[in-house]
Image 1 (cartoon, rainbow over the protein chains, first blue to last red):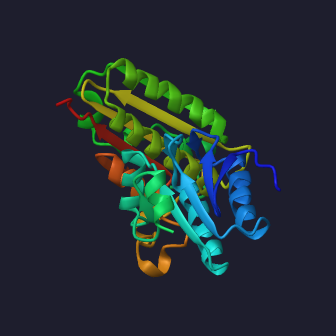
Image 2 (tube, rainbow over the protein chains, first blue to last red):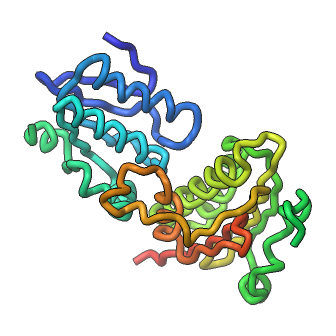
Length: 117
Length: 164
């Protein structure tokens, strides 16, 4: 199994629940690595069901949205499913303004996200 | 204007094009005017300094988030697109904090751009394109966002949200 520097993965049955180690997800060298790690989950580890839990994230910028959109495409291409959860209100506003709340399946908490598979 | 502008001209203080009323009449609490290398870590240092001042003035969490986001997007645009990641270029950050308002001007040494030409990133066919989301977020989270004619300088204002 791949080791991840920016992500912590919990397995709940056949779902990979992903927590972020960085409190802020912004444009710099780390975001490229973080993107690669998210993509590896789908492409190398062949994960089909993913929950991204944002409970530890207080800030993200548009650079992070780009990575999430690419991840969503990769998950769909592998016939998988992606859920997002535990997004604080200001970050949820970012998804709403950019209308990405329509692209992503966003759930209130982890239990909700897991129940949605 | 000569083309391309010299470094000095490109980083000229913003006040020459800003309506004087916005900069002069109201007494400010704090201000800074920094010229920094074209690097994100340098930009974030000034960003943190500004956010710390807002915290000291007890601005609410939601306003701090909005200012952090707008500055992040504007700095990334300046470094990546404006100055094209050129390490020899610089960025100017000028900021004035008033009792109920913050004004930030960020200037790069690039050729500028026309914000009207940036496509709408929320159109379904463009949802997976990386362009335009930063500017859209700046406009949403700040009270006012204006670009100069050349397009190498953005002036953003945030009116403080009163605690209820």
